[in-house]
Length: 100
Image (cartoon, rainbow, N blue to C red; front, side, top):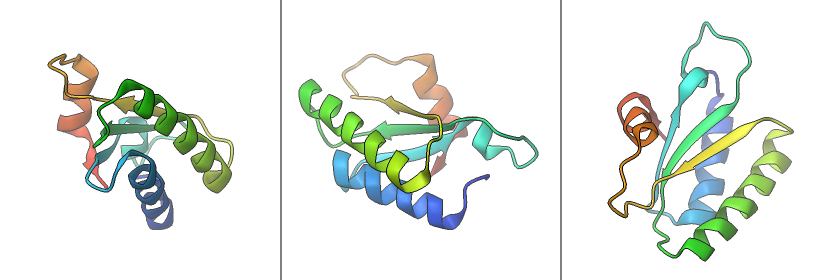
């Protein structure tokens, strides 16, 4: 994985703070390939939060804090509210992603 242990810990702390301590957080995509270069940080979250307004606020605040801590990098947050809708990206992230 092309994230240092410090970056992994920081990401988990920030997302847990904003989305809830019991939220599932996974890294997926190109950052899992040690031979690749560049690329954004793809993060999958199953939040404890359930209300759409709370999730939007958490996403915005988490992205601001992540950018402050990690620097200006492209970060994609895929949020699965588990409301019955199963998107293909959710399946890919769960199957190929690494739990933080």
